[in-house]
Image (cartoon, rainbow, N blue to C red; front, side, top):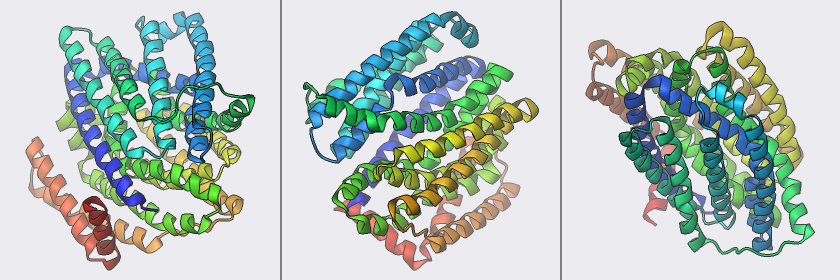
Length: 473
């Protein structure tokens, strides 16, 4: 299928974007402090939650239907119309609840919230359209452009003295900046859709909205509950740990975005054999980096947070380890979930997501008051294990598809990661981690040890050759 090259390009783009994001977040955290940046994270959490009903799941629906081949312009216009109506309804509800939202945020940011919400859902729809047209590399480039513009604008506005509003307006400008660029590459145009096209989008989006809500609940419900029970400072610490952990799923996220439209096309053509043959390598690629980062976080999590973001963030060390474990499970989930969605089974995905959401919300409400932000991380990890397990059990039964898990490869990665963690721990006992330089040395040594151990296995040597070959060719 040739997905390796596209996955590598998307991964490299996301690594670059993440690196810029980390630099930006470090600057925000050090300049504004955990309390102020915590308010922005609350705004982002509301945008994340509200974006689910605001776009009514049309992003995934447009990508799915367009990737199958058909009336692209009519399908895109249908998605845009549905989103416009749903966004209007949500906007009215937000304005009616403005007093409550303002009290929750501790600052009058209603119009800024709506502006960021609109820019976010519209830019995401355009990126989904590009992926549906299998222009995945272009969508990756535009994601990078969005990140660069967001950071530059945010920093400029912070220097101007806007604080929280600087980050919000930076996000708005970043999302808006990619719209004219995307239009250059999109083949679809605005057209007059029929009822058939609207029904086609809605038949998928009504379930996809609820499935997407599970991911956004995982991403934001913990922050919302922390904000309710604890102070903004704890919101800031937890969210920084969450964002650091996100680096471990860059590869799996890239692979999943390539898998979905390509597998969707294969299912539409009745070619299940290619899907089955691709899954083991997709799982291996997805877990390669998360397993390494999880084991690396065991000896270094507290040092990383306190040295990079400031001493106040060091309390998130245990949280970071738990979130790294969750990201590893998440990476496996990314592949299995996208297989199910590519096979046009959103109803089942909705049922699984509903179960996981209930578990996640319940655990957050129970654990956060008892053990603080560590409870939020435990809730996240537990509910994602449940989520991934249910997806794994459902795919073979519903799609008549054999899912071959590369157990030997996973064992080798885990063994390499564990040995790497031991070596880094021993080095840490002799090298005081008191600066970014010493931290960087330990991280570098750990990375080298992990990949040296991996390539002693012939299967991984072959896999590395394929990756480098796909980049060169």
